[in-house]
Image 1 (tube, rainbow, N blue to C red):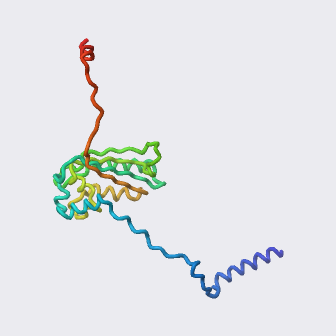
Image 2: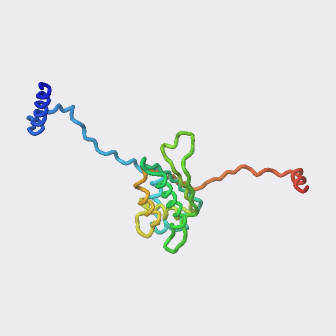
Length: 206
């Protein structure tokens, strides 16, 4: 009985304390949390600055034209998914990405993309930084790449790919991180072809 009375009294005391605020107490200045401003975004890298300078120099029409700097351009995209994204949702994201090979077109109907390939991360090196799916998009020129990438590089309507822009809006809620890396193919190395000897040719005739 005594214990119950003590619990009831304690409960009553806590209730009263919650309803009747105590006198204001001055806090020690060094015990207060220090307000911090949000971290500033990192400055753009040299490649991003160079691309923006190209856009400013030649104008958006030339910058996104098919003939702007023709070359084989690779556009690497890595996705890191949110933890609750299902395998079905990942497959749907990959399917829609691959469809951009057909859907990404200019207003006159010409395709923008040369090819798209994809696959899941399966390296055992342990340096994937959590990225789980990769895509490799190839273009015939920097102009095609610029038109395809669109925002935030190209923001003027009519000069970026609406299909890719819609895909980015679809995929964004499923992603915890994304990384892109573009390059112009500057060199290509392959192993040498086997040398055919006279003996091998003679054996083939038999």
